[in-house]
Length: 148
Image 1 (tube, helix red, strand yellow):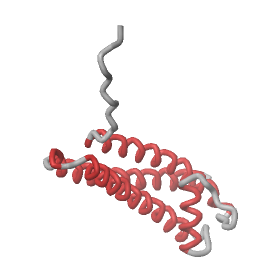
Image 2 (tube, one colour; image 1 turned 60 degrees about the vertical axis):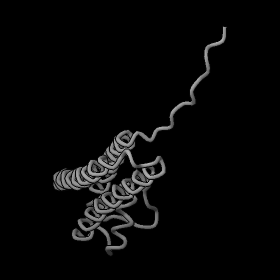
Image 3 (cartoon, rainbow, N blue to C red; image 1 turned 180 degrees about the vertical axis):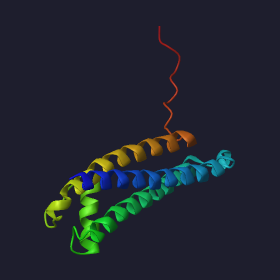
């Protein structure tokens, strides 16, 4: 049990490093676009945000692949494809019904679920920050003069 907890903590740390790397490089790219921001229409800014979301998604896939690689290396799951399936099910906390993790590694799969919840929250905050960076929130329609 202690081995699973220590390994899980190490994987959470590596996952956070991957997330931080994607966040920093993504924000660096957004910052470089800031010099051209005045030339962006709302549609261009929206496209940039969509690309940013896809970039963060790639980071999350890399994180899932890290966990899957560990599951496969521990022989906790039969094949790498099954490891990816289990890892994605754990990371998203959606679960899996037609695959199984070796009983001695179930706690590690649960740790990945907790890690995934943290990462999804982190990505949501990053995306909101990116949206605020480009100020693409819809503005309310101007109101007329107050009625008396």
